[in-house]
Image 1 (tube, rainbow, N blue to C red):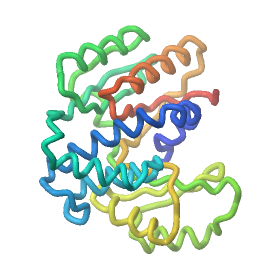
Image 2: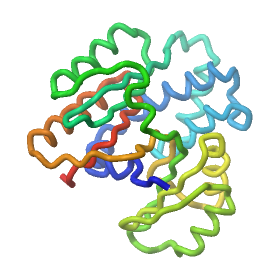
Image 3: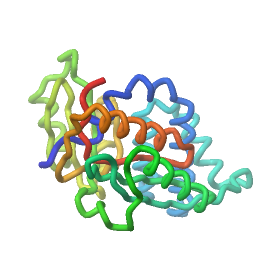
Image 4: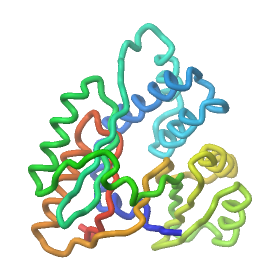
Length: 246
């Protein structure tokens, strides 16, 4: 297993992520709405994309009432939003691979904003497929065990019986990997067993990594990520940079 999921890269900004919880909820709500419309169903048992979005919402501590209202909104006349999924690929400092997943109602606007983020901080926007070949699409579930309250053997058995492909432990963190099509089932089983998640979503996991050491490169990469992640249309930013702890 090529470990080192996005979680290791976002730990440095966990506090900032928590401070922007309202914006996170808004982005996840948009993802739920699009999942309902694309799947033509508000039933996560038959709409796997919706099931994945709900798992992500729960891991972010989005209240169940909010999730239900969002699903209802997707079917109601109050949801006139016309979002489309768009993906951008490019390079950051030192050739770091970057993929930006967005949902937007204005393709020209988001393209311009993403290009600006790349250009401003020493990167460049590439063509479709230029870096995506070096990422694997996987379901990734993160469980915190920093306090040691969970028995390692029990977690291993529960995870494998739930149907996960692999599990790794690093610094009190359980990283659970699934096939994309099995993510909703595995996360559902683990949730029913009482596990709570720090993060749960389908991710693009890098096959290799670029460690940034120069202060200028670290600063530019950090600023680039902040600008992209702060964009209302951006759902996720995937990259293979290894940044020092902040």
